[in-house]
Amino acid sequence: MTEKPNYFDLVYQVVKEIPEGRVTSYGAIAHYLGLKSGARMVGYAMNAAHTLPDVPAHRVVNRQGLLTGRHHFSTPTAMQEALAKEGVKVEKDQVQNFDQVFWNPEIELSI
DNA sequence: CGCCTGACGTTGC
DNA sequence: AGCAACGCCAGGC
Image 1 (cartoon, chains in turn blue, red, purple):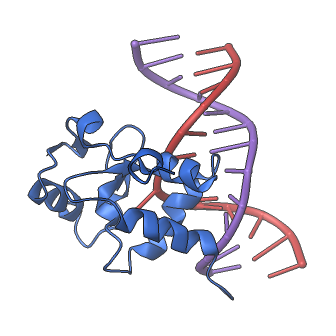
Image 2 (image 1 turned 90 degrees about the vertical axis):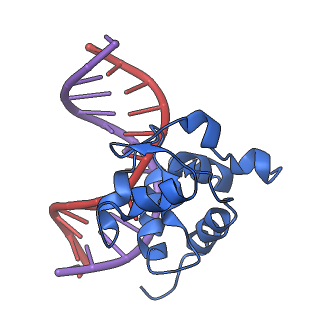
Image 3 (image 1 turned 135 degrees about the horizontal axis):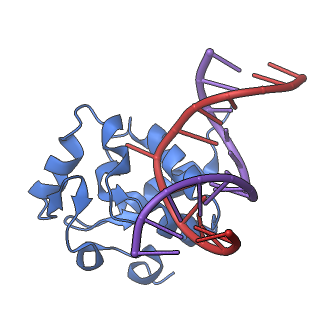
């Protein structure tokens, strides 16, 4: 990695703006950054963000509200535990009331 | 330098 | 309504 892609930092910033007790989806961030087809890239960026303490990757889930990246955490339950502590109900790796805790950057950040 | 994999999403069948 | 395949792009080996 000769350089760190700018959009990586963009993803980090958006994720860092996620309020406690709220979650967002990769596609939402991707679309917000213009990476409409780069949802994968967002997740990929998250992989690097995983090393940054300021990037709550546990608040980022997929479109289904499913904790797809929980396996990348220190423990398979770390993501669920973190969300549960913030008030987000997680059952079987699935976010409950996903539509209620969903945080849309395009709206919350007023684009 | 080339191939493969990968925290997703969407469309088609 | 559920399952499968494709598409996008970048990093790692």
